[in-house]
Picture 1 (cartoon, one colour):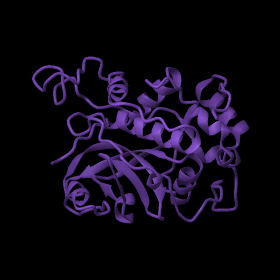
Picture 2: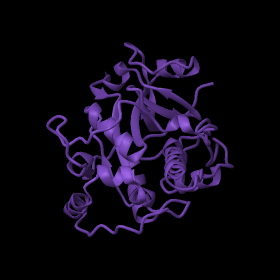
Picture 3: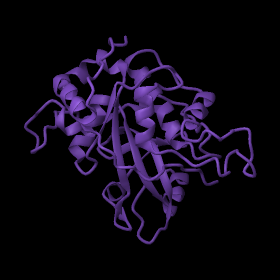
Picture 4: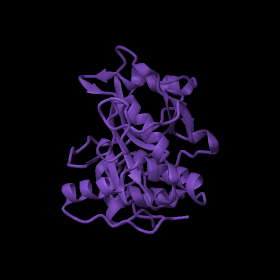
Length: 274
């Protein structure tokens, strides 16, 4: 059966850029730190959940839950946010939505089920925290056209929050357990948010409770002039501040300077989570 999507078009507001505050290296013109040839944090976990994305457009809220699970499992004590918490985060952009409702009133498939915009959701997590009580320290865009930067981001942060466009053919590839490709002539099926958590070197991701991967043709593909991979974000969580890999891969002083330049505020760095 077809699954749901729920990514709204990006608002393109000013944001931090990962490439300006990662630790420098000699790789390319941009300061991309060294990183393993392959890495797959997702494979270390099992029993990923769909969390309502089979009935409602809550893919962004599911991505938050999957990312929190991945980060806590790798850096502290695993915590997988519940379906109730996923709905709670979803309702921050869909306040009239009721998961117990119907398509005829305010439930899944209704006019109150309108998906989420990624950056708006990240801003909410930074200012207010998620339903699990944890605030995002900061977030930044990743240059998805620079595969070395993508791989370094995955190695340093453990996961990337992606915004993609899904083609009709990708649902068939998903059902057949095949990598997603750019299938010429296939129509757009919807905008989707997912968690990338590894590379082999092809980028691996979780969607609809299953781990799969992008073929290079999808990662580099375009539809109607827009990249199939349209958005890529990293999120800094309190747990990262106790991670040796993170601290070696990020220039914290530059991060603080960039944050001040973009927001006009001083970045508050909480104590490291252990």
